[in-house]
Amino acid sequence: MRHRHQIFFFFNQLLEPHLYTGGDIRGNEILNYFNNDSKFKTYIICPKISIPCFSKKNIYSTGHLLPESLLSRSNLFIIVIMYIFRSFETLKYIQNFKNNYIYSTGDFFCNIFPSFITKLFYPKTRWITVIHHININPFKRKSNTFLSNLFSYIFQQFSFILIKHFSNIIFTVNQDVNDYLISSGFQQPVITVGNGLNITDILSKIKKNGKTKQKNQICYFGRITPTKGILDLPKILSKILIKYPNYKLHLVGHANPEFLNIMKKKFIHYHCLDKVIYHGYVEDYYNVYRIILESNVCVFTSYEEGWGISLFEAIMCQRPIVAYNLPIYKNLFGSNLITVKLGDTDKFAKSIIKIIDNPRSKKIINSIHKCYLTAKKYDWKHVYNQEKKYIQNL
Image (cartoon, rainbow, N blue to C red; front, side, top):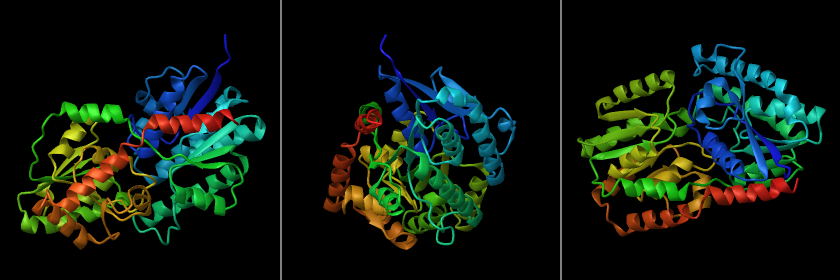
């Protein structure tokens, strides 16, 4: 029987029994492709609470030392403590990792630290790392609380030190991350492979929705967090309601309870909470696409993105998109995506109103069509084939 390479996917960062961040989804997609490859045998390292995310049997679980299901997994300090415990708990499996492949699905230190220890004791182990985005200096990053930004920055920089000196290869999802790492002196191969979509599955679910009539609504699809610019939406919505008082905003995505309360208070402040429908995390994407298809505009208020899987999925629905003008969008879509200056809520609202006023304008039709053609080019299989080629050459 032909020898199969063993590859261990580290998902120690997971906090819920489902995948809801772009990085988590990306890791799972690449895992699935390797799992179906006869040359590889895959294993998963994840917390006990997240085992339902995976339909595989080869799982080594962490998160047993603390009663994680009873803890507030939205509390920053508790998350840090959980990550530390998971990091050390992973080391009990170190003999399994020896001289095999380990794949860190993100630069969270609970993935990076045990990978570093493995390489330290077993240098022949091949360590693959994925880096999605760079956390900027907390004094400059305005889209989250200072404390959260500080912890994110410190732990990422700590992870970078270990990655820089011990990782065999780094995959990034955009050129900006690539340039940052090379300028910071990383010597191992740093390869920009991007992200992808399940094009066939997405189109199938969209087609299953049939002809969908637009309603008096706009929607947001993605994580409900400060870095996604969610707290800009109450002001934006309040301005839209001046001209279109019957419109509603549909929010689709995971939010922790603490931030959900902050968000609701902001909508109350702008007198428009009754115009908001919060769907939470929607597991069946058929329903996600239905909400997008029924909307006149899909909004993306992110202040930072590594790539933007949710935005790509919304584009596949061929609905008008309005987003903040982030460098990654410029790199991917050129001038075809409708964007406004970061943080300019007045211009953002005016752009939405302009689309509602004249949805069949030539500019809007061209934007939808050209962005759709761009999005169709990206498929997870292509990303997997790139990564596999480099991994096999290690």
